[in-house]
Image (tube, helix red, strand yellow):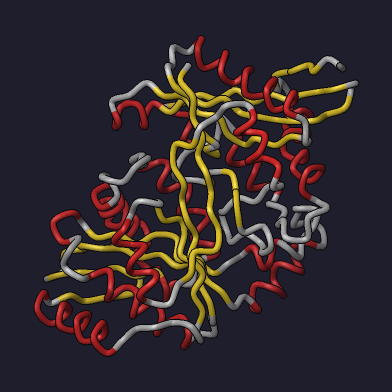
Length: 374
C-alpha cells in the first residue's frame, strides 16, 4: 500500500492547490458548480476573514505517490464553544479521491490537530461554520446545488460511514416552483389577519441606509436563530464581511424586513441563485473573460434560494413567517423568478418542514453533518 503523506498548507501556491483540488474531484460531474476562486481565497484568508479573529484553522493536503489526492481543514470556533458551552472542534473543506485510506489520513490529521487544541469532539464538514456552507450531500445528486450549498461525489457518504463517523444532524433542501406553489385561501386569510392584528409592515431593505439596515438585521438574526441547533452568533465584523459580498448580488426587492410600530421584528432573505451564473464560468475566475459571462448570465437568473427567514423569539408563533412566504412568492414571481430552493432546514425543525410542504415544497436534497468524540 502506498504511503499517504499529509502536509500543512504553508504558502500561496499550496493554498491555491488546496482551492483548485475541488476541480480534480468534481469537474467530471455535470451538476457540480465551480466556486469563484477569489471567493474561496477570501474565505480561507486568515488575515481578511474576521472569523479568524476569534477562531483558528489549519489546512492540510494529502499526497499519494507524489500526487495530490485530498484536502481538509481543522477548525476551532470559539464563538461556537462560548455560545453552546461545549468544547467541540470542526473539520471542513473535505475533498478526496475514492480511497478510504486517504479519507482516514485526512480525518485523523484533523482529529490530532484538534486534540492538541484541547477539543473533545469533532464534527463537520463546516466551511468554516454554520454561517457558511455545511454538510456532505447524501442524496439529490442529479441536480446542481444552489448558491452557498455543497455538492460532492456520492462515495463521500460511504467512506465516512466506513470509517465509523456517525451522523450528528441532517439538514434538508426543499424545492418549490410557481406551478406547484400552494398558498391556500385559508393561509392567505391567516397571514392577512396576522398582519392586521399585529400591525405588521413588510418592507424591502433600504439600500440608501444599508449600514443601519445591517445593524437591524444582525440584531434580528442573533435573536431569532439562537435556539437552533448549531447556531453561532455573528460578530459585527463577520456580518459586515458577509454583507459586503451579498450587497453585490442581492435583489433588494426580496430582502424583507417585518416591522411593528417601526420596530424590526423579522427578516427574510431570498437570493438570486448565482450558481446559474457560476456554472458558466468553469475555471472559477472572473478575469479576463469570466466577468463578461457574469454580466450576461446574471440577467437570466430565474430561481431563488430562500436562505434565511427568522422572527424574534417572542413572536415566532405569531404567523409572521407566513407573511414573509406570501410576500416573497408574490414579489419573486412578479420579477421573473419561477422557482426557489428553501435551504437549509434542520431535519427536526417540524414547523419549517410543515410550512414548506403546505406550500407545495418537496424535499429533494439532504446534507449530513458527521461527528466523533476525540
